[in-house]
Image: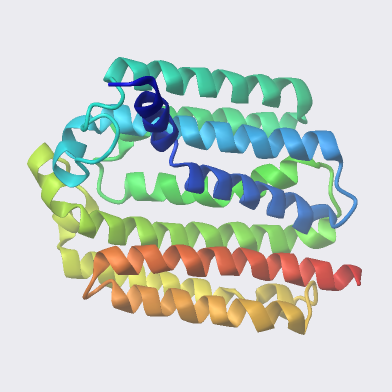
Length: 286
């Protein structure tokens, strides 16, 4: 295996698109909290730490999931031989180390607390929580939504009038992430059953799991107008968040026939919803 393929494999381990997206969401959390008066160093540190920690979490997940991936995702770097299990583990630890160093040296205490909790959650997820029906999904949902909380914590203290919007943003992200994780588990039923995992679709049935995912998306859509109703954001927010809701609701419906397409399209709706908060916040500054 050549050096170029090994480097490519290490980059793939991080799922770079997802890692960078998590960094963008951290930035959005900071922007929603304080608007254009962003302190450069803490925000940059928080964004980079999020990208590195997310990449590290993805890498260590691949390390623990290497046997399952031989069935569900044989083209992943470890199953195809681009990266050794030990190499993946060392790489993950190195990324975690740099992320922790950034957090401890450059961010406020609240951000450090969130980062430490999330770090422990990332490390223990696969071995401790992933196989517990719904519990692993819930943990991933929290981690997805917590990027916004982390971004807000990086610029703490913030104006209390925007905290409600940040909390709504966290809840919407967590609910939609939980729905997506459930749909993904339906997609991965064959490999998870082979490995002996008791995921939610295996425990309660695939259709019931998909119904739960759809209900979560409906709850998220119903809750999404709250920042507008509170007067925090104006009509510009609704113009973007309503299409985002429609995309996510359609993705939930689509998951019944094609879980792969459903969970993929859910990502687009989730990111569009995050953009809605940026638009809503930017409109208040105009």
